[in-house]
Length: 287
Ligand SMILES: NC(=O)C1=CN([C@@H]2O[C@H](COP(=O)(O)OP(=O)(O)OC[C@H]3O[C@@H](n4cnc5c(N)ncnc54)[C@H](OP(=O)(O)O)[C@@H]3O)[C@@H](O)[C@H]2O)C=CC1
Ligand SMILES: O=C(O)[C@@H]1CCC=N1
Image (cartoon, rainbow, N blue to C red; front, side):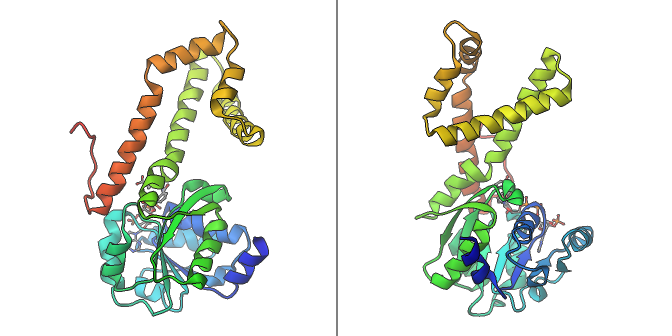
């Protein structure tokens, strides 16, 4: 609840280690919801251009020194690419104070690896997604056993500021969510782009095609949510016998769209597990 989140986050200090797309999305969500003031946030970021951008855009206190960034923080958010994790571990190993909670959003990075590397037991793994930036994120999180109620409450307050936040009951569910919801916006944006391009191919000006596609996606999601009906039932309601939807759906099924989507989600899941094993370069499963 909003008031509870305010109470939990009052006077709490949060350090973001890595201030790229997601570090900014999380800091913006907290500020946008007015759950923290900018003085409660610090960013650790090696890229000078990024430091000046975030200083100018959000007013964040920024430093290139990760050890300095975590000083006095109640929560330390790790938002670097998996490939940069070893460098962060080198910086912060043995440097965390006893009560500091570490919240990692790094795909694949296991609690065991973080805890061993940082020499710290208070670790929470989570998987947000980019719509967090506007408060419509979908996040899953899973705490290590050492994180107490207060630590979990702090994490939950931060994650709920970005939208839906679900505490899952296994660490594997974080890898599963990485494939489904963490990576999910990429699937949706690809479909959005393909539909817009198809509209342009038909002859619509791009701006009209964009408006029609965006509203169709938005309206369909809200309709599904409000009606509570199964997607197959809603799809049947669109599909007039012998009509246009039946003709289009036939082509989608023939092209194996469902199988392609399922295979893509499994590929993302396998990649999350590989990242967890330290395999930093990806590649297609076929080799
Ligand atoms: N993007 C997404 O949709 C999601 C991403 N994630 C996870 O979030 C993490 C960050 O992703 P994203 O924000 O997209 O990546 P970005 O590359 O946008 O952000 C990472 C930032 O960390 C900086 N950085 C590099 N090394 C260090 C270091 N040693 N100390 C501090 N900062 C450092 C990078 O600087 P530089 O550019 O100079 O390297 C960059 O600004 C990843 O682990 C990813 O798995 C989770 C959910 C969704
Ligand atoms: O592509 C990635 O690896 C990150 C993790 C989830 C979304 N983006």
